[in-house]
Image (cartoon, rainbow, N blue to C red; front, side):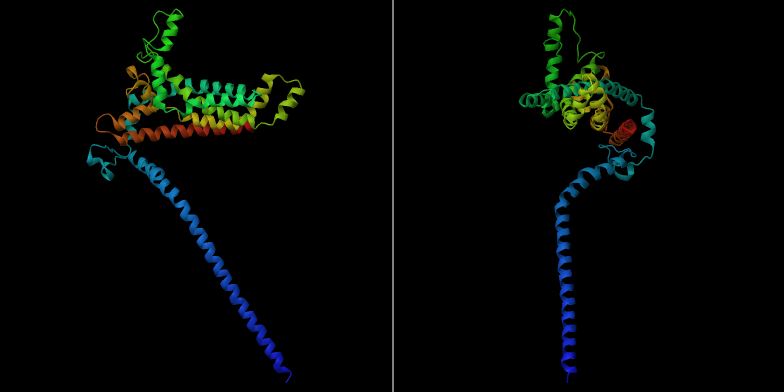
Length: 332
């Protein structure tokens, strides 16, 4: 008789155990379902960005890579799709194209004039603004420095076109008052056309680079400068041995951003009012030549233009790699 209650209790424990297992199973099932729905909501929210990337980034890149190996011409239907594939013919033509190499040389010359000047001016201005103690005036100087960045390139180049006007431009009027009898035709002379493209481009990039340098300078611990002053370091020594080394990451970013200005495509077309690259093609950078080949001349050879663009992209990637390797070596 005593065995019956014991057996009953054992059965109850077993039943409770089975019930606990079932409850745990359904609890885990509900948790998994909630987790699954949570993941689905995450996918739902990132889907628009992924779709936009695929349409406007990934597909154009793949399309451009294919076009770089095809004789795709917008006005010739027979060259569309796989029918226009021509292997390495575009590349062979590019390496034998004197206009392409001329435009690449002009772009390199422009970059060598633009980069050091813009870099030095932006860095110097950032250092000067960082020395301003009054917060209101420091903010005012930052706004003034950044103002050209928010202007559309076409508007900025219109202003510079008026400044460069051979008869009524402010620059030539000033030169005449200073005693220069025949001031140069900034936009009409092949000798000075490329040089006249440099100041507007610097003006457009100057504010962005200045703010980047300012961010880097503001992030440097003030105690480092105070310790250097206690040790007797003057302003130049603080700049050379503290500011410059600690700004290496910002230097890397600015140099990488600057490598994208190698063609000055929009600036050149807006300043000289077309795709001829100024008088005598003196300012025909590679970007302008690519645009002219793809959209203006002949039957719109977009395949050949894609080849030149891909080659220019490879050059930019090599420049970026050199910048990263150099800066990493110097930091080490």
